[in-house]
Image (cartoon, rainbow, N blue to C red):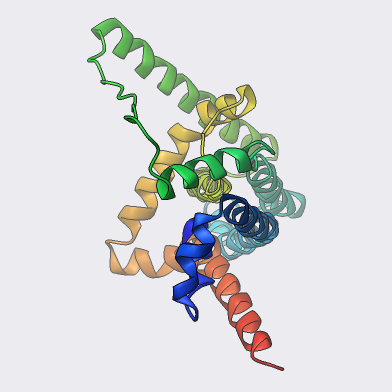
Length: 271
């Protein structure tokens, strides 16, 4: 990615590539400039994605509330209390804000590792390069069972917490079911946003907080991924849920990013 950006600078003057890359100091300076530009862009893009995701969740819950939950609750339970309707929209939005805010940008030392990796690609070092290959050994049965139990524990804690919160704000059972499914897809969308924060990182180190968040979010996020995939296979359901979920999390964000890039390109053409 970084090396590609550097090479793009020589599209109009390809004969200078060899000379520039042969100079380590010049190469390091170019890497630093490109990396800092990428880092700044990534930081602002993640901020926009966080805001768009929170807005998208709010829109998705409003649509779900008035198209599905309110009509069904009116038929089965006589309706939903106004304050519960407000909580139905606000609580998932706040949860989404918390999830997407948990991302971690690369550390300050990451640039040194990027420079080292690019130099290893460009310059042929003397001697043999040694790469460590980790062989994946089969797990023992007891270890596999323990891991599955931990996975299920994370799933139970998260789903149980979601259901408990929804019951606490006095939502009817149908709304609890709908919002639990939406929460699963919402967590999957938040995990996609968080994953983009790691695109510049050379080493993927997980902090205890990230490990704990992953422990609670991955089991439900996998269900959300499965739901999003399955819903696309059915025409009628796909039309509704693509508009309700996929569009807020992915299409809307990508549209804004593409539109922003388009405006920047047009702006650069103005002299």
